[in-house]
Amino acid sequence: MNEYHIPVLLNESVDYLVIDPDGIYFDATLGFGGHSSLILKKLSDKGRLIATDVDDKAFDFSKQKFISEDRISIYKFNFSMIDVIAKIESIDGFDGIIADLGVSSYQLDSKESGFTYRENTDLDLRMDKSIKKNASDVINELDEKQLADIFFKYGEEKNSKKIARLIVEKRNSKKITKTFELNEIINQVTPQKYLIKSLSRIYQALRIYVNDELGKLKEFLENGLKTLKSGGRFVIITYHSLEDRIVKEFFNYNSQKSLDKKIDPFGIKALQPQIKIITKKPVTPSEEEILKNNRSRSAKLRVAEKL
Ligand SMILES: C[S@@+](CC[C@H](N)C(=O)[O-])C[C@H]1O[C@@H](n2cnc3c(N)ncnc32)[C@H](O)[C@@H]1O
Image 1: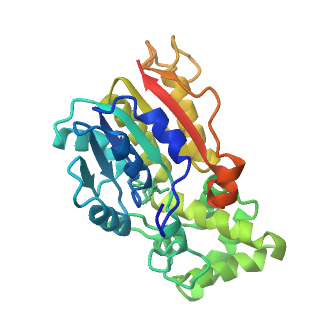
Image 2: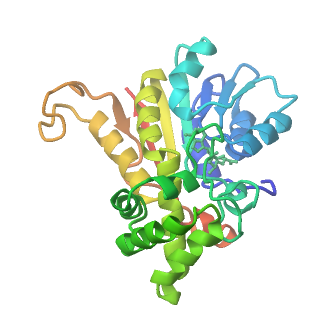
């Protein structure tokens, strides 16, 4: 545990992941090294861990944290590039891949990271600061319908159309660049008792869009499956229904015996099952964990093994 982030479902996820102490593992979301620390504890001297994170603060912190640890290599790459990282490291296959999706508590709470709606900061929401368009660009450049669709699709916000309309009205007189300017717009169309929920939903929607979180997750799962060894495991923790659905459907699809014409009309894939699902139902945090760390409450852990 460290001051920046409390790791979620730590023992459960790492117990599922590390099945060979001499193996090679991939931590797709290094963050502040909570899961990586426990993985390293379970590995022998021969074991290796490759880890990545796109966030500058997480990368710098963890580089320092593991400075005298020879068994870990740390990258600042999007996790969708897992296959590229495996090539750079000359790794034939991983014995396990873990992803603890979403953002860290540091990203959510700190003013500098530009994720919090509780402080008046630049509207940013990029995990990877090299991405060209930040949340302010999105808010000021997309048309009303596109904005409403983002709020509805990625935030399940009922007032999506009203909020989008007011954004377009306001930005005609002045560009919207600060979190409190956006909050004020959401405030104007949302009943007070739902305000916090709406703020969370709109910021979640923008974050998912700005970082292409769902697209990157799909690429990561596809590329990750190619880099897993037979018997190697995918261990994925999700925090909202959109990402959980993608993981669930990916596992279901790739564990099927025969073609399902409905989801694969051209019969391109899945002639043979490629994985078996280990967790029939997702593992969720205990009441005790939720009491200690309220942010763990929405977590769902799914595990599958490559055949
Ligand atoms: C929930 S935190 C992980 C916390 C970590 N397990 C720990 O215990 O400290 C998620 C991390 O994943 C990173 N992240 C999210 N999407 C990413 C992506 N597509 N590629 C690389 N890192 C990503 C975020 O920057 C964040 O640091």
